[in-house]
Length: 80
Image 1 (spheres, rainbow, N blue to C red):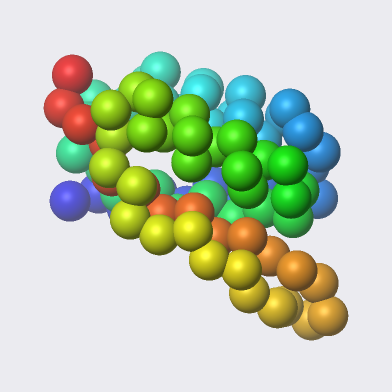
Image 2 (image 1 turned 135 degrees about the vertical axis):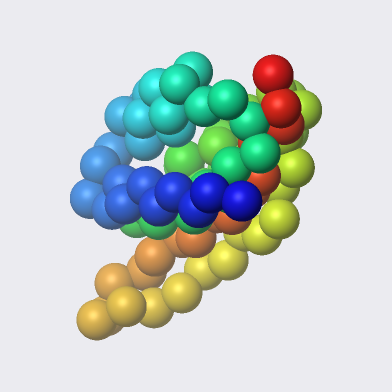
């Protein structure tokens, strides 16, 4: 299984959602994504979007990195 990391820290909504959508448009399926965000709104929207498209959400976690709140979203895409 291919693993792709999308480091979207520092980007404000809706840009992280657009970046995830762009990656999914190019994805053949069966890929594990690790998305890192700092935008709390996108932490709510992206998992909803992932589920709505039928992909498998694995984890949504909040972490602290160098005094900054980081949201980590992990999911696996469905085959097209």
